[in-house]
Image (cartoon, rainbow, N blue to C red; front, side, top):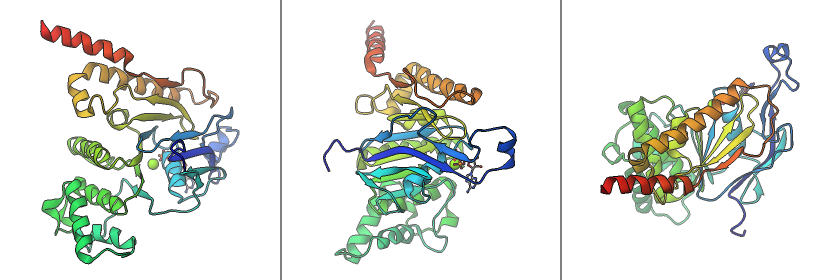
Length: 312
Ligand SMILES: Nc1ncnc2c1ncn2[C@@H]1O[C@H](COP(=O)(O)OP(=O)(O)O)[C@@H](O)[C@H]1O
Ligand SMILES: [Mg+2]
């Protein structure tokens, strides 16, 4: 595999569910369609590069989970295919870790054993018990659960339970992490902590992450690339390359120091999503200007400006 091969390619994916009467009444042309990456005009495949933090943003019911489950290999597309490292995905695999909104740890196992369970699935190939315990501690430390190593899930808060779920997914050393609204059920202040954790994990592991959310704020805080979906069926009409490149300006910093620019980018993303909600009849095509790269040219100017103001 050469370096130019994307980590993931989503090619002309389509998925249908049995038709509901509600949709038939509304006169949809293809009422069962839940995901339609090809759109009405042969949209190009979606490429996700290795190490990229990709966001799929869209309103509830638009088909985000369905799309993610096709990437996971949990459901088969009706048309098209998912390629991982150039190879078609046909079933779930340990190379693709998954974290859901609902808590998925085993209630009868401690935090340590829950993570260890993930490791065991990997088989014992050459790893001693001691090495495995060490690996578990490393991951548990990474997700900030060292103090809860011997606790059971029922003793943990929602945020901590999600940390366990993330740790379990990471135990398999996945090279793609698929996350389906993982923080959707958490209180806002805990949610922010979890988002910061994701940035820290990304920095440490450089995993390719596909993260589904309906929250534009979350999307803009986490993503390198943000795809915005139409309402059902899920068609990824807009693609934003984030103007705040993480290596240049860490996101945590961006939120404080460049908050004005940051918010205006967030507003742009929100506006586009709103537009797609308000115009469900629009053809699912990608037009010039839908794929936006607002790199730092604009922001560099603002940075210089704020520095010269600071100096005065
Ligand atoms: N197993 C299923 N059978 C029939 N319809 C489904 C099924 N799963 C989801 N749907 C429908 O497909 C659409 C997309 O669902 P989903 O992928 O869960 O969207 P999202 O994750 O964006 O909320 C919704 O209209 C939902 O009701
Ligand atoms: Mg969903």
